[in-house]
Amino acid sequence: MDEIDVLGLPVPNAGPVFLAALVVHVSAGLACVACGALAALSRKGGTWHLRFGRAYLWGLGVLLASVSVLAAIRWRENAHLAAIGVVAAAAALIGYLNRQRRPILHIVGLGLSYVTLLTGFYVDNGPHLPLWDRLPAWAHWLVPSLVGFPLIARAVRSRLRRKAAAG
Image (cartoon, rainbow, N blue to C red; front, side, top):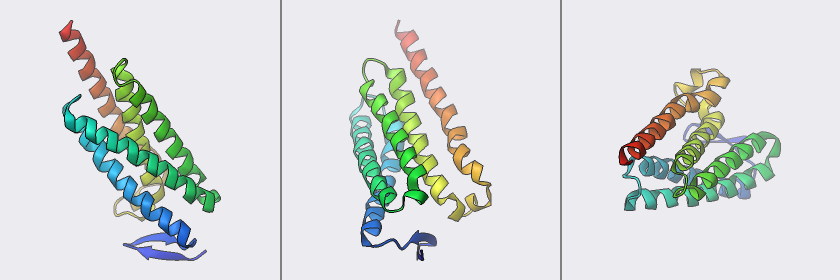
């Protein structure tokens, strides 16, 4: 199958439905990356945290739907990305459903979702990105976790300290 060059990234020329789904997918992915980071960095329980968190979840839903279309068209090449999308969505759903009763599960679920989202991005695009193209393939799978998991652990410790201080 031939490829199209889009901003230096090779894109499969798999027809107009694939390309339309890819545009939606990339847009939703960028929104998720921005909204997830802004939700994580904003005051917990505050207006911005809630707004960006909801936008992240909606974007993740669009991302999962679009990766399903992409995988249906090119299953052999995209099945692993669909699996990554399912894991990210499941982790986010677990985190969202536990936002009030189990705040630690909220932090871990949404943090894991974000790390999984970034893993999918780097696994698919890392070989074509500056600096990332010099890393071995296994690094595309592991680097997001090596960066993300300590940050999730830090957020959990912070939450536990606040809970202990409150009595």
